[in-house]
Image (cartoon, rainbow over all chains, first blue to last red; front, top):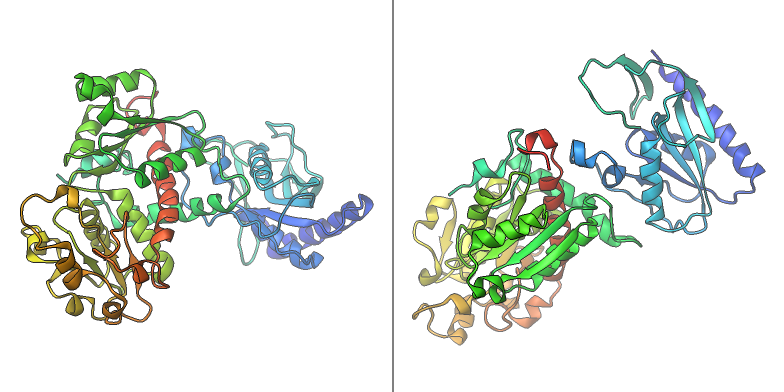
Length: 177
Length: 326
């Protein structure tokens, strides 16, 4: 569906939008946090392009999921790493695909267990329109796409980053994202 | 009593954690990997994740314990579960209630997990066969049989320091006969594929047929410690000693106590472990216990992460696989 140059283009659109968003809101020295795994890949590229001084934070939201009691433990991914004190900082929270909003809900809960940020800006590479189950909307969007519920949008990576859209054939998988 | 069938659900996920014996290498590794994720929770401002919110865990301690019980309690609290501490040795059973009545009473209180410490080998296994299908049981030490979470926190500590198990020589020193920790460690080390597991002890403190477990037996401390990467000391279990198994504590220390001089036989980057509580001057010299090769206090912190991992794995299974749905 998508090749590498396409994602690169979306990333520079996002970087420009983040820059203008943070400067118009007077967000000094924003702190970037990516949601594992795909969001962290996107955040890593943006973090380089924007030349942020503070190290990139990475969140593994496995312990904050709302589907633990029905789906159980997910395979272990490396733990969250927020190397900088987040209190009173302006956070740019990055994910690859925004779908139901449940991942972002979980990520915000986890962020608040590390401290009280001054603000959180949500930046996503892809926004699946009309799929939200929670009142969560992105501030920065690489690209909005409208696909059917049976279609699965996924970022493949880490090198190169490409977007794949497949039709899900599996039975009754729960929506996340 | 391998307990393997009862430990896994139909999907091969951990349902009860009763013994390290018979579990696959990938399952043991998965416990260590999950524990690695949970270890970071203890380093945050809010040392709590909402994973087991609304679950109720009962610590059933039929035998006294401080370290194991409190680390299970902390692990449960960091997972946001509610925990009951029942010191059964001083409560219901002394009033004549049978074990199964005690269990059914706790089930009626809607507990989701029992953490069991008992002086009799096989107690946790028995309880796992008696409880309702949605309840998970974790063995926190049964008689001389097994103490699987202690073994896994030791494996976690070894992996943190040595990265892999493949080329390691590990010596377990002391009272193997009475030690459920040693048994669980031997099974875990062998499954994780260490090069060699040695046990070092006087003949009177070594169980019969121990060679069948694939260990090398040494009676001489200097010989046994030669070139090892890890030394696991065991506590001399005075309370379980009946009869003349040992000449005297002084003589024991002379022959099997870990001193800094003896430790020179091991590799220079050896780590020294002990499950606690330590008998200073009986099985280990104070300067070694507090020395730079000692990782004894790290073992305690790692115990919380490993117990969080086991609790989350046993409780976090898809409902269709766990028998009945609560």
